[in-house]
Image (cartoon, rainbow, N blue to C red):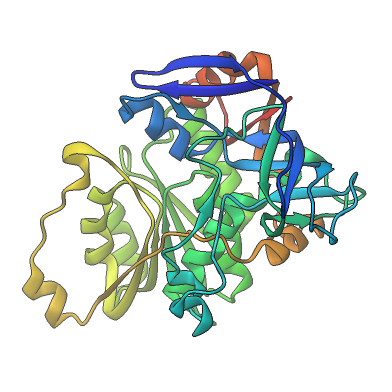
Length: 342
């Protein structure tokens, strides 16, 4: 079977591997779709060793191992990329979010593949009549958005700013609106490229009241003019440097939820801790591992409460992986979420 691996700088290797057989308590999923995540791009920019790519997987149960009675084969499912152990102290105390004994396939198995072997409790069924595979694959990034929303505790009538109009930021724009936000401000890097312009337009369709671009607008001044006391919540899916703007536009006592990732010097941010302290701000990191909220995410997508067609902008066959990654990273392309379909 095919299995896609990569390393820096944007090198790919399509491996020919044996089709996996399920062990005890495992299933094999025939991959029907897998979305490209920003994490895959980080791997391709920074990992020195060959790394399996792809973890936003939808497919069907192809084979069932011994001691598995929940699945018979043929069911349409999505795959969790990290699952809590269920037996450690944190899991047993109802805090599986903080499990450190996780099960994952990402260390040695690619989601961009024909088949994927996983533990049987790492799959969730979805309705194939309601969602095509490339739409169901959006459930994984939606769980990431849901996790950040929960960490930031967005509330009814909050003024909310979302930094970053990628797939997760766009989903958060919609989720904040569903939570009853009074207004949602969505910010991006620019509107001068087809990608930047398109994503901000999708943001408006997702419910953003105001869209701003860092290259063309004074984001801090415009949000402060609209909300002089500052916004209640800032949901940051952009690089760490944008935290400085988030602190400025946040009101006294506001909560900033953060999921932006950058490596190297971009991962370092300096700020006035006294100003942060006296403003009583809270900075809450979200790292959606293990993945929670898959049933909720699939329901929101199936009912078009979060419209998958606004997000899944491009699909490619697995053999067209180079074109798929090129489209996603090209600012001249109006891409949001690119999905590979084996």
